[in-house]
Length: 321
Image (cartoon, rainbow, N blue to C red; front, top):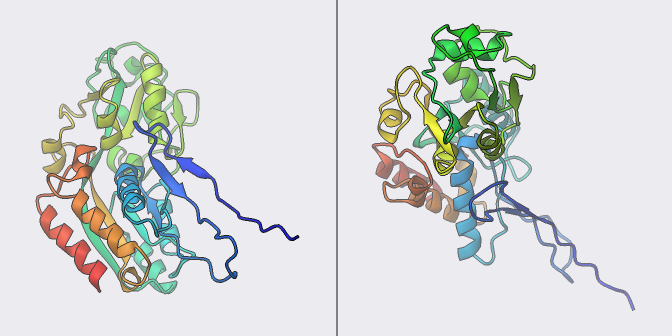
């Protein structure tokens, strides 16, 4: 008797989430069915600042649609996400990228050259790249200038950077020192034309894994971390959010752009494909629900846009095309 094989892909979970957040159930191969084209698995990429919100939408889809394949959600950074999104149309490339900046003209041109010509951009809210330290550690008065010096020079102590700062060792923790991954660090915290981020023991980079950065900072006395606002806010029981240039990171200062490292969150989608990808219109509806002032994303650290209702309508209109 021939034994039928039934392949089941592994479960992957969001590292360090407060609850065991489902990141992706890769396609389940059905036993006894004639092999055919693989079903379209929704693929979401982009900034780690948006990872909590995309995970919420993906988890809701799995709870409410028993027929849907769980979306694959990856946080590899804005630049890396846009590059993959623009690789081409169709099921082998990401359907959505959530970025912490607009696309550049070069990125738009690359998308077009690869056949990705109908890209819709929807502002879903704001984030910021914030500095954090342990809950009970001192809060040094940092500026963008002092931070840039600490990040890009061989200075060993904070007093080497600025005589007004304490003579304590510089211990910085953040994303990988790669512009494709750490767009926010380069674009929002460093001036154009500054030297590359240091690669010695004073700076520890952890890819785009914001949850790991949060854990390392909480466990390392004197360390200062660089995190997206949502993850910093979610870990506020173990981390202290620091002022930058004298401005505290709050929803009000981020939305008004008074906080120096505030950034938009923009959802890009291939508008001509959205309505034809199974479950993607429903997923866009969940994004639309989440970005409303009383939505689930705001409860997890999204700073809502003033025109959140208009953005929600835009998402739903794309889903109906």
